[in-house]
Amino acid sequence: MTPQQPREVFENLVRSGQEMAKVFFEQLGRIPQGTDQAAVQHPLAGLASPALSVDAQHLAQLQREHLEQHARLWSTMAASSVEAGERAQVAKASPGDRRFSAPEWSTSPFYDYIRQAYLINAHYLMAVADLVPVSDKHARQRLKFMTRQYIDALSPANFAATNPEFVQRALDTKGESITAGLMNLIADVERGRISMTDESAFEVGRNLATTQGSVVYQNELIQLIQYAPLTDKVAEVPLLIVPPCINKYYILDLQPENSFVRYAVEQGFTVFLVSWRNPKAEQSALGWDDYLDQGVLKALDVVREITKVAKPNILGFCVGGTLVGSALAVARARGEDPVGCVTFLTTMLDFADTGDIACYVDEASVSARETTIGKGGLITGQEFTNIFSSLRPNDLVWNYVVDNYLRGNKPPAFDLLFWNADSTNLPGPFASWYLRNMYLENSLRVPGKLTMLGQPVDLGKIDCPAYFYASREDHIVPWKTSYLGVRLLGSKDATFVLGASGHIAGVINPAAKKKRHYWTGDVAATAEQWHHNTTEVPGSWWPHWSAWLVQRSGEQVPARERLGNRRYRQIEAAPGSYVREPA
Image 1 (cartoon, rainbow, N blue to C red):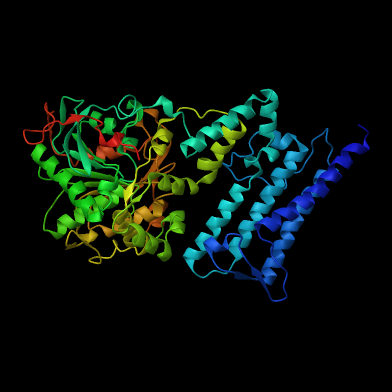
Image 2 (cartoon, rainbow, N blue to C red):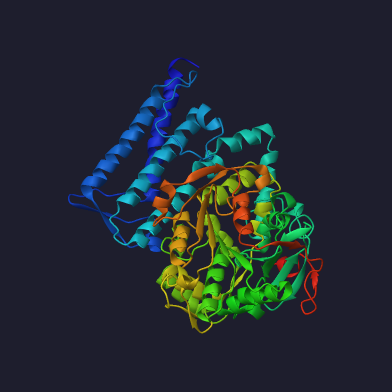
């Protein structure tokens, strides 16, 4: 290679890069020039919003900055030496973005160029989406969400032709990785979803959901599990756990070392847990009131009768917490004092800001649900999985596309991801009512606006001690939205704790591992004021919650030797049969 050849290589690269950028712009929506206004049609406008207009002056400045970035990139790439590899980093991935962490993305001039050109264009498109003058908050959120989806899908890391790891892996394995990737793809097509973990490594009841106990009650909707004590003495007041009905309960009872249920039992609590049925056609007409009556309120009645404790403690997780709040409000409207204290884990009671999930909920979509399945039918578990995965596509979609199909790897065994793939259905009437009254109209926060089981409900009537936990990086229940629930209750003894990580990993943070951290502080008028005066504590939030609950669980008494009682006899061993039902 002569001294002139490297420069020629880069000049060719610049020319091909200019053409690539042009195509990229045409695909993602070119912005036409204009004197006063420039019309912008978003590439996904059919899903997001109608044609919108952008101020030409701002747009022109944005275009100039974008082209200047490209010019800097092309110039530095063309002037750099191949051997020295002295290429400027005009664009860098955001912290935590692992798509371009492999060294080939930086050591190869060609792939380095592709990477940086993509990042420049991605930043530009998000800036354009942010510039569009949409007055409606929901429409703006959807526009930006759809833009991110499109940008993430077009990452060069997702395609064999533009991913250097695919090429290097194929060379290293003499093509075997390509064969393995195709076999993985075929298997996933047959399965109907992307594999995230080695599903053969786990089985519910064998190495997941193994905390000992028995089903002591069941009806069409739930099985109620009572867990066997692990201490000689227990707190007098039992604890009822209500997990989300959108997922299977064993996220709270994975393996012994990361089981929240087992931890609670080890702390000396008598634990009961609702295992929701995976609805089939026979349950497709069940609605919100059924989940309150046959679910939460019936479970509380059974716990009272078995333990002879008039006011058990209760814990709700995610939508399980919304059901708990609703059930307690119904009981208070009836003049009852149902529980000693309540714990809400990553729960929304006020749905003012639901994050990117709101992009899937509008009047048209909810009306369509009500028309098609509002009186009977099912929303499949796979549909929920797809929605939740789209909220973090690089982590929950494209990461597995690249690893499974381009690299040809088999996903490793991971209990949490096994649970994530073990989806459940929801009855159409329940889902439609929930979407309209909670997500769309945010009615639960308004005293008396909603009637449940014939009672106008008011969360302000719930005045028992309350513990709220939220996760800082939660993409399903934003923590500041969870905080709003604290102000809706009538409790004068409220605690709010913020943990690190996300919706699941933040909750399932075993105390023994001493990972992450959490924040505590006195309840304030707003989430921002609360956070300003918090104390950071290393480790899991579990011991903090346990200490809080102990103080509200009565005296220590001998552990109950028998599960259930004469009326509510042991039906089958935990984890029961409902949790094993496939979607």
